[in-house]
Each structure stands twice: as structure tokens, then as C-alpha cells.
Length: 183
Image (cartoon, rainbow, N blue to C red; front, side, top):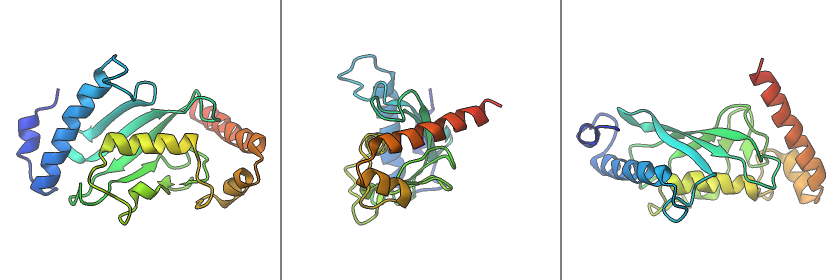
């Protein structure tokens, strides 16, 4: 269990508002994700973990999400990196997938950058928190937005309605990812 007193009194990277907010969120995240109760933890089977990379620095986080069922991402897990700016919660966190870890029309595969409206400064609201942001990324896997794709080719396949081609390409990519990672 992290020492929240030390975290709350650490001022090296961020504003008091940011630190207070992120410590409060961290407590909620730990309690929520530890619960077996589906009402207390609506993210069960969706967000496998959400933790700071280093418990002494709450500006860098990682999450593991499970691919949504009935999508080509089903039965796969994805690592997400989260950078919390010192201006949080007034500005959004920067969230990305690991490089070359996923094929999706709203993700720049080479960098992992995600195109998601709620993560844009002009769309962001401080009402959002890290749990909701990670859940929104998971929902993007379930419901791609092909009107503003990073991967235009995948976006066009979806826009044309060729879901079997889309699913086949993604499944092939993920199978190759598994093969490479297991060697």
C-alpha cells in the first residue's frame, strides 16, 4: 500500500491541486479495482490494472486493459501509458498505447498516440478522471471512430462496411504481435 502522506506532501513535479486530485483518484482506483462487487467495480474484465509506474511519482501511470468481447481485440490485453501533466485536472492526461502494440483506426501504431476527443484540450473537462479516461480508450476499441482516423486505411475499410476484412487484418496483426513477443 502506498504511503499517501508522503505522496500528498511531495511537490516536486506538480501543483498542489494536481497532487491532491491525483492522490484522491489513486485511493479510489485502488479501492474500485480491488472490489469483486460488479456495482463497486464496473471495470471488472475491462481494466485489469491502473497504477503509477513508480509509486513515488504519480505523473506516469500504466494500465492494462482487456480487449472487448465480440471485437478482433477479444482475448488480448493492451498496455496503456499515461502521463499526467502538472496542470491536471485542468488539462487532460496524455494517453497512448505501447508502440506497435495495436492496429486500430484511431491509433498511430508507430507511436501509440490515440485520437480520442475527450483527451483533446478543447474537449477536456476536469470531471473526467483516469479511470474514466482508460475506460473511454477501451470503448474506442469496441466502437472505432472512422471519421477521424490516424490509420486512414483501416478507417476506410470500416467506413466501407467490410468488417470481416477489418477483423481479419486486426487478428492477423495481433497474432503476429503474439508470435514476435513469444520469441
